[in-house]
Image: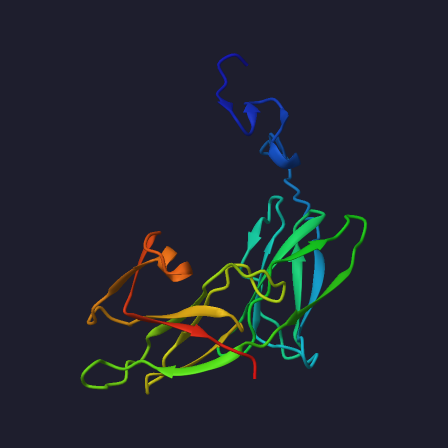
Length: 239
């Protein structure tokens, strides 16, 4: 059929044509009188248990993101949260190695741990992973308007460490965020190490301050600029 239009997926009209596509998929012409049959491959399910490191108690409300490094499910951030028993079943993409990002839900006192690398050979159909979370040091404070002392509700309070964290109990680039309540108060868990608390007001009615990331790390001028409404250095210690 010399004059038949050619489709990259279905080949030349009137002839069954099959060609290779990336990742092992195959495309084939489907004629009007044929029935299309789709075969869905069941996913292996990873069982995850999240518990506290100190008490070995289940931790509910923890979100988990998965990166398999292989298509078609490379990133899946809508996998739900751990239940009251600290458990979550994760449907996994094909692959032998996965990375799990763990995010405790506010107002949890637990800190996000380092990314978990899971090796899971293809011939194994079942696997359970236990993740232990460390408690942070609870820091309390408030955000108020200068001059009037009026409480600022809904302000974001961020924690960032002064130095890269070399501790498997905590995420390398840990960032923790909490919102102030109607009284302008907040409680935020932080690791027992030097860092900064930075505040972003919920509106543009306040004056921004500019600071460089290099100054946040070691006090020297320079680095990428960031803007906050206020900030304070902090060094929390375990009680």
